[in-house]
Picture 1 (tube, helix red, strand yellow):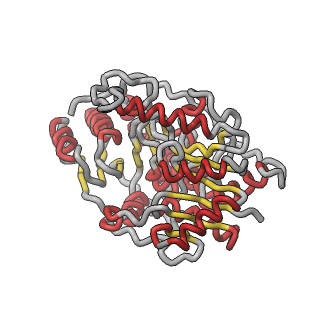
Picture 2 (spheres, rainbow, N blue to C red; picture 1 turned 90 degrees about the horizontal axis):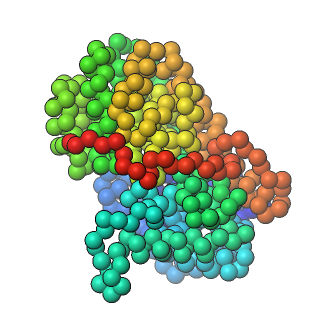
Picture 3 (cartoon, rainbow, N blue to C red; picture 1 turned 45 degrees about the vertical axis):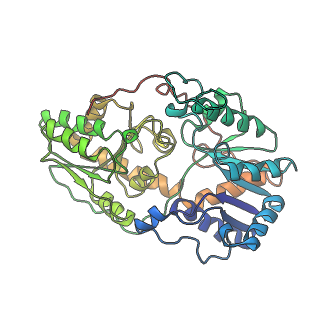
Length: 413
């Protein structure tokens, strides 16, 4: 049985879900290490102190004993997973120590070159480093490139989190044929979906109200279907700096009586809302590295519509089967998909069932754990290499980001 160490920055439900399944599978041959304590803002939102009591969780802030255990596992485990290896210095240092001993390393990250930090788009930057007189973002990009070159070794395999993570590696010629599909895992629901058939299309989106979430695209799309006499109700859950602008936009578009904003609520309550809704939308730009809320909506049996820019888009959605895709920022295209789902209830329900089944059978934490162990055994030569068609640990596909290098379709709020 393999020994596996997974390192992460701080405890969260996304990491602990998979970690619990890994521990179920490997027992004492598994460790999860967190280098930073619980985030105060997350705890203020009601998050518990995940990993506080599990003996297989290494909480490095607790003292030398924990740090010594991390150092031991980092060198002796059969495989180690390193998050954000190119941008997070602590993980990078641990990775370099192990690389020098030619042991199997599994760096993982979302895409390296998001539109806001693209290595090949450096114009318009005025902030300067006082000593080197270079834009700070340019220096950051060169640091990313330097880290990527360091890991371009045969004992290093990359777990690509999101549709465009492998593409970004290919742009700089790194880790060729050593990229594997990876992502985020969420707890599966233990409650049946509540089916409520009405003449009104219930639409939901949830998350921080930031520019990258493109909630404005959703509001514009809803105003378009409103003009086509489609009955709908849009619920937006979350808060953030764009809240007032978005409320004003809904008012200006004449749909404020059908567009309702709700403050942050615990994830359990969000998932309860998902079970009751018809359509869930993730409209984010390519700055959304993954978007775990899409996992949650699909697992609850929602018909989902996702922008092609979001990291989880082409990984989780088979267009017209487990959901619908639309070009990032294109409110007309989104409106067409909403109109289709409003007029085709059977197809809407079918996609919701397919989405829930796909999450159970392919993207559940248990399946992710089993596949990861099979991949590691294959890479170590202890078993035949697994050949998964899609999902976790399948060979990462190169999806070219055709939007990243040009301006999104945008609207002034």
